[in-house]
Image 1 (cartoon, helix red, strand yellow):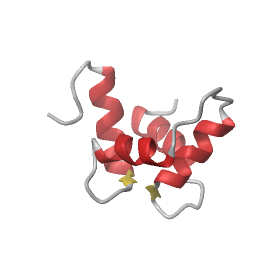
Image 2 (cartoon, one colour):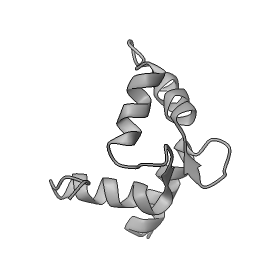
Image 3 (cartoon, one colour):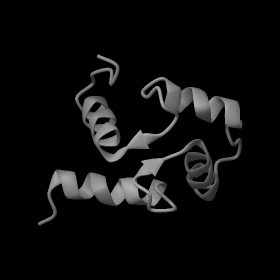
Length: 79
C-alpha cells in the first residue's frame, strides 16, 4: 500500500517536469495546459498562485505536501 507521502511525491513529480525538486511557474502552466483547461491562466496569474504560498517563486516537495495536506483538512496553507 502506498502511503500518503508517497502519493503526494508522485503527484509532485507530475508537476516537477524537469525533476529539479521544484515546481516553477512554467511547469505549473505546462501541467495545467496538458489537463485540457479551456482557459489557461496567464504567466502572471500562475506566478500569483505560487506567490500566495511561496516567496521564492517555486514550490518544493515539502511546501507542496503542506499545501495539499492543509487543503484536505480545510485549513489555509498560509496559516
